[in-house]
Image 1 (spheres, rainbow, N blue to C red):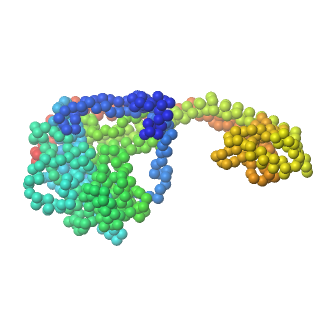
Image 2: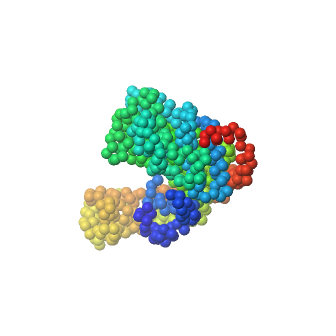
Image 3: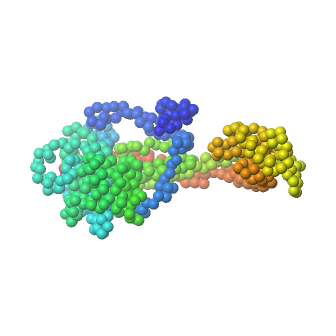
Length: 615
């Protein structure tokens, strides 16, 4: 973007080459990673940190006017966010412990083709959505977030029947795989031939299934997930139909595989023919204009990027929605990867928003485009460690306090600069203006106007004693005026007169000059122009009063700046305390590996029994 719109700026700062830009504003790290197909390795260089953010944002704001929704004040509906918390089943709790075991093995050293953190994270996300995503033979928990979503959707469907209000359900995992239009009964009749085929990772799932070697899958608690054809989409649809929702009022965005079909589907949602639309962020995000009757949006899972969350909310919190108040439901399985991922994404968005709107951004920030949880995060999450929640709260607080401190320091630098340069320069400049205006006032007073007759004026070497003729001579002189270039035309009351044509405003400007300049905008009336000249000269005392008031104001600002300069950051003690606690938590979370063997020995017999049953 900067190369396209700010090429001259980049060239002036020697940043036309990307390497130069990257060395100024970013830090890169090269690491060996497993290739997506899982059959080899590749070196990948990515940004790890961004530096010099105040300078980067100052440069960027030369071409970008950053406006947020609250600044624009658009006529959008009021939104009420509701978090629906589902309690994990005993099977889910046991599976989370299995994820902890896998994370420990990966951290200890294992072939990434057998297992890796990306796969653990992916399985954790599926487990948080529904335990049947891991093993379709596991029971359908009535209190799961999928069933709670079905309850809410059906209730709202009933309440909004009169106005045919509509709803969206977002889910990036378990998207339909070629059977979007089929019911559960139709799918069951297809026999076992399709069930024997290996599933193809859906492009809507942000990562799909990371391929693992056969020996790793065998005997694993998550081995059943490999050939799992269970679909949350179809499960929700079938349950709604069973409760009485007409089949034609439920649709998958995946049904519309062409632009024409998408337009037809969107029109049906806007008219209320389709009242429940399910889809992923990729297919139902930007460009989905179905807001007319939307009353509720349901986020079944958490996307990786904050921008995806904004796109989801932007489908319903939008101009053109007939409802004054709408609802956004976010579903979380407590104690699973769900809660952590939601907090992480929301914290990322808060941090991004601070950078994009603050006058003084933080000096540096970590890259937020990570797609897998770290070993320490998974271990603490699986153990139900309250330190994770404390750490995330501290992350936000410390980021906010650092931002406030950066703004405080910037303000101190500005005050210092004003005291050393700006205030003295402006005071000296205005004192000079005052002296110049006083001299011009004395010159004009030395050439007073008579009570009746015109004082006289010299125009292009000729003296005029008649006001009307003098005005006509000025209008005649305008014909010789050059664009944006002054030329002298005479003298009036001891001041020299210069004339110029301003093409931008299509104006003729006559300027009387002594120690200072006194511009007069000329009009078509000869006598009126002479009156304008007199009014400008009689306004000199008022200009002097204005400058005197400005000098007094500058002196007051200078005194206030002196009193504020050198004051410490008010929340310095709080920042130090929270930073120290955050560092302590980071260190303690990374020490959990030493306790893994002890945890393994102390695993409850009940958990072992559940693991065997799940297998």
